Length: 263
Length: 263
Image (cartoon, rainbow over all chains, first blue to last red; front, top):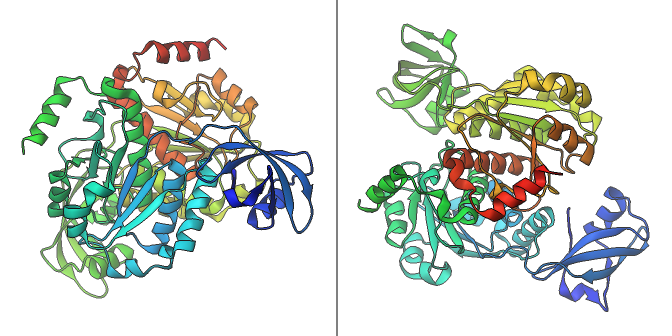
């Protein structure tokens, strides 16, 4: 826990009283005593500093001052994800929140086992707990929105453009002719990246995404587990966005990108 | 398992007989039958194609043809890692192998709990099993070498230059003035990245690394769990290497980099 995340309703006149796992963390892990200052954040709000004013076996009281940036992540990036196995989903929710994704859209693709849609991790309380753990890890305050679109075709055909912002859109595809190392993100904008199940999207699914402006890209590292692929995708796309057009000026890159688009 | 990894000693006149979890995977997960072709790889050697020639409840026989690139990763990148918790270490070994690291150097830093050095994951057989699982996931064949240097100061002062190749060296430091988005890796070369324990390196440790040519860098995403940090570090540094000097030409980037070096 690198940030004590508070809900608006918990803060009254600049004071918050904690009795749950956050209190236990301050007491047992940080071994805080009155006067100790800790990083705090307001859910969907600014970050700040909390000063421990009282601490006992039952509760911890904090005096809160919110003066940090709001929000910590300037872009509303979206992760489109094929429903993974429950255990993997729990980790991905946490990682995606820690990485700073603003939106997670789950959809069922051909290679997704139907049972994955019944996971307890998908119960709103559980989903939220994993997201909050990720925010506390990554020192972010913006709670990612999670949407479910179990039916792939209606989602991609009818809902995608309302769900996902325009701008830079990518679909991870191990067979794509363009690798992230050939890419440029020309202007600073939110990105969306679609990541398939363990065995990947089908060629038909990649085509469906491509028809809606998702560029198929290969991550040249190798075949990765879903949670690693999510981290690598965010790391490389956010870096390319920060670097801007400086990322792709070689004739080779332009040539490969052009040939991919003409297919 | 995206690659069936074989040891040199297992292949006789182009044939291999499997009786372990690889046989079970071919039989029960891939539901292979004679004639089925699967990706194979020779440990520390080339990749290729295996054709199932016989399959029963006890064993699977493959006809092997090795014609792939050797090795799949052109650079010998190194991960220097503070001993993590055993559960995390198991995952990091797998992820690091899947990402393509050639070398993993474990060392004890100030914020590493001593008990982490006693982990069963560090027993050579267990370490190797996790690395092999990562290679099978990432379709790599080069088994990462794992070294342990429990004493930090002697390691950094006396052994580092023998252990780690020269070239691009980085140490992850949340307080570093230079972020990966300001960086360039000017020429294609192996990189080394040092990643601390959950609570990071101490300022003294960062200075020790910096004195040996490790540039302190910040990964701007947020504070990440060790296994996510390993993936993000590899993803961004390998991308910067592929992009080359195109990554940093703005006066801001140069200015920040220069001010960091003059400290």
